[in-house]
Length: 431
Image 1 (cartoon, rainbow, N blue to C red):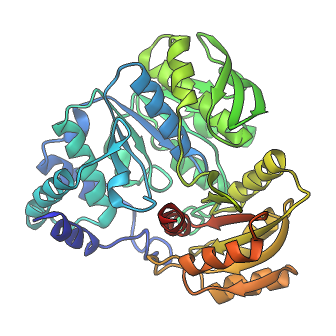
Image 2 (image 1 turned 90 degrees about the vertical axis):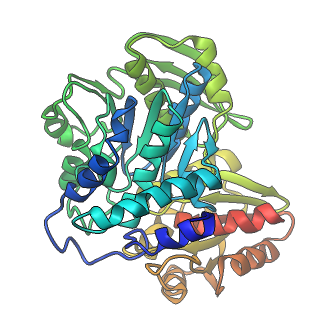
């Protein structure tokens, strides 16, 4: 198959990213993924893995881990989800997305195995398997693998991570894990025998869950590692990070938001655990100064100021609002473009954004998402909150209208689903 044919075959698989079933319709299992890995000669065992999960921050943390490993001269494969504009973004080697021809080749190989399987693989099974196969083909020295959802039964959990990272525990995917304790247990399921768990969650309510994992050691944020300085700077943050083996001072991080300092601390600790020794300070300095996290507090325009951020849940929106106030002040109003996927509640997200002054909410829907919350539902929630409201049929039209409403001196925020952010980035990038 060529690239177009391979993507058409992939998108014909069942995709729970866009079609969410009402809860689990049968007991969860990794049997299908293990069967596929066996048919592919277990490519996920050909390189050591850092495995990451968490309610928020896991993609940014994964990208910072990747940058540190690269700066240390390690050839690294990175698997993240979802993508913003092109599916190739999910699978990268040294921050470069998989080439079209390579993706077509690995998808074609997987399509030939599908008839041999007891049950057809899902969309996420296939794209995850494609990443594992390609990483083996190009012989990466290490892989950074982000969980798609929760942990224990996630498709990625066929890897044997020598380091597991759990960024935090928050209310997300409640249709699959109905309580925060259940979410913690699911995420703890990625921790493998003899591994190091780098734990960003500090709530003692979950301590017994993480103590019960088979990890050889647990590094806890604010105890074993910490971001001890986290100051606003032009274009990012200035950090000092303490780990079990070292102290890294006066680091410039080229990302916005105090929470990115915490993500950076987890990333540094994870790489230190992975290497089994301190990291050269120059390597950490280079990596943090060049870190990127597209779609996460990303400035896409200056006249007007346009910020995009995939804060799809309430904790993420609260962190976003705090960062916008810290970095840009609260004197000026924002025109906010919002689009969400079920089961997220637009009222919760808008309530979390309350610290910023909102001028107008423009409700919209992402282009590729059958699970999209209707723009009319988003608009009704914004109206109930007392905001001026407009409805736009597409993200592109919403962004254009937001820029017009804001004017050259105004401020525009695009937030909600990462699919909305991806659509907006495509429009703003073209512009």
